[in-house]
Each structure stands twice: as C-alpha cells, then as structure tokens.
Length: 297
Image 1 (spheres, rainbow, N blue to C red):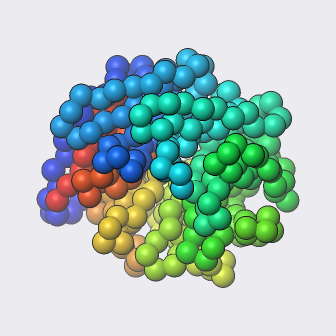
Image 2: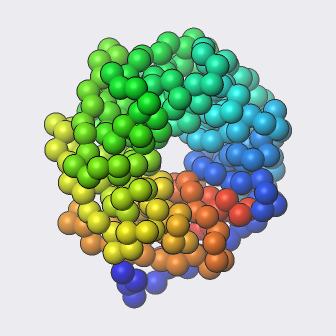
C-alpha cells in the first residue's frame, strides 16, 4: 500500500549505470561505504561530497560490505573467493577462502570479535579473524545457498538459506540449527536483527517479509504486491524495519503486525538492492543503476 507518510528521496550518483552499486554500510569515519559489484571497486561517499572509489580486481565481484570490529570495513568478493578488508584510508588487504567457487556473499561482525560470512556455493558458514585466519563450518544441507548473515541478539549469527528455504542459526561453538520456512520456495535473502530480539528477513520469491524469534517461531507477512521481489532489510534507530522492493522500484517499512508502507523511488527501474542506516541517521539504499538514494522524513 502507499501511505501518505511523506519522505524525501534524493539520489546521489556514484558510478555509471554499468558499475552496479550493490550494498552499502555506514563506516566509522562518517562516510557511506559501498560495493560496485560489476566494476570491482569499493566506493566511499560522504553525503554532500564527491564519491571516491578504490580499485580491486575488476572481476572480483564485491558484494556485501560491513564494519569490522577493528575500525576497518570488510567485504566479500563473490567471484574471486576472497574476503577483503579496507581501512578508512583506503588500504586494501585480501584473504583467500578455501575451496574454489565457494561464492562468499553475506558478511557480518560477530559477538566474538571475528567476522562471519556465507559460502553460497559451498554450503558453509565461514569465520575470519581480523588477522585473516579462516575457519569454516559445513551446513547440514546440500545446495542450500546460504546468503545474507547477521548477528542476532542471542549471541549467535543468523542467516538465510536462499535455496534451502530455511533460516539458519550458528552459535559461536559452530553448532548449527535450521528452521524451515512455512512457505515453499520462498527464496529468503536479506536478514536483519530487530530491536525486539527477533530477526526480520525477506522472501524474494514469495513476495513476503518474515520474522523469526530466537526459539525458531516464524511469522510470514504477504506484501500487498507479491511481485515486488523484496531483497534487503535493515532496522533503523527507532526500531522500524525497512526493506527494498527490487522488482517494484520501492523502499518500504513493515510494522510488527505486518502493516506495510511503501515509497516509490524517483527514477524508474533503479534496481534497489542494499539498504542501511547512514552516518547521518537517514536510510540509504544502493541503486544498481548507479546511485545511492537517501530516504528521510
């Protein structure tokens, strides 16, 4: 549904349409850091200034980027099977992930001072220390395509199994629990921890938003537009849940009872992917057509 709630949406061009801004995050330096998945670059934008970019191997496919516990930004290189680290000054270090074609995608800092990441094609969850030591944990599922990952409020990491139709939890001891989704072939992608101890996730194939409690209780909320292709999800400073509708060119919020408010993006077919709270407290989304969009009341 479209609500009368007013938001202003400003687009900040950061690349050409072929470079593919994919995900973004707020760095410790008051800047937005983002990945350019198709051109193999990491970008930095201080709202109001010109963007800068840092070059990786052009075919590396940087996808998800997140703040590390060490004051640097960490990111996955989906096509190069590497985990990257970039300091706020732009110094880059890269660490190989064992097993070619593992396809690291999601990455998030854990409560243990390390970073945890998904191996989409390897059915594994990986852990990398800030020194670059990698361990991996096999999942009890084949072809499950673990995708996004986030730290839950319960001291564990939670992740989506895009092809396994489940939400997974891995403890700091490596113990894994999988929670199947009620809807078949839902295709979960994004996941974020709510302020209420639950986790919120997107079901890109089902056109639904899901919520899972730490004990594994799942609720699913069908979107008004089931063809919207919800992709990424984040939780703002007030605890509101925001997500991107990649197929419908919108960003939207959902309340705990499932009420959805959607906001059209100004440029048609802009392909919104990642979404995050920026250093300025506003919502920002990465548009694969070459911009970062700021969403504010």
